[in-house]
Image 1 (cartoon, rainbow, N blue to C red):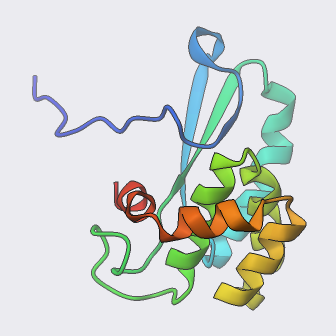
Image 2 (cartoon, one colour; image 1 turned 180 degrees about the vertical axis):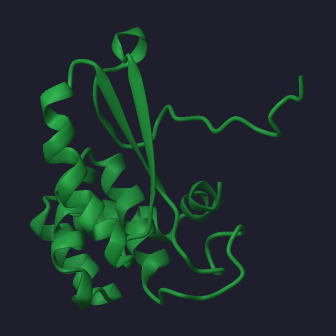
Length: 145
């Protein structure tokens, strides 16, 4: 039997619901904050799956559709997807991923580097920690992974 090329590590990624052995099912969503279809999924999946929180683990994976931060993508479809994904990674470090996730998707058509910082503040992020995280080379590396 052929072995898979690689197995993605899910630990450390934003998730909700059951954890560890309690999760009977794990759903992994690959999402781009500028994708209109991802926006629809963001507001349909969580409410629907909420009734199964004790059995289902839901894991979010940033997958921006832009070659500047995603080595798997050759095009530059969404101009602010990389900025949004990096900001979301930094929000996760401050345990504020889901509030920022919701704000970005709610206001998707207005994404820009400036609005992301405003929304991060609304989501409760510390501005100084956010700036440090955004400037850190490790943030871009984690996103590319």
